[in-house]
Image (cartoon, rainbow, N blue to C red; front, side, top):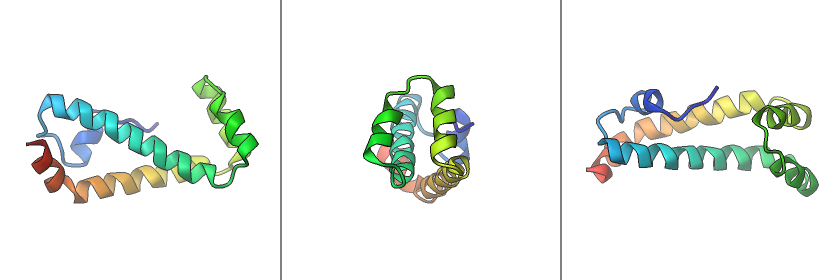
Length: 100
């Protein structure tokens, strides 16, 4: 399972970020990751399918729906997450500079 938490922050080299900024960073990172995943997966879905998906509130049902309508979505999500982590790691000096 993909999580944006303290372990994620450490993995991308941002452990030294002050706690208040770290909380904001984690929330923003989660939002950015969700947007990237949504954009990627949404490319292959019709408007009707997208509307159907956004109505699903239960995470388990959402996963089942994705499995049915976008085979291979788990691998795509893993790759997007890995790319995101690499991007953040490469930009850690700038991120920490902005947080200081």
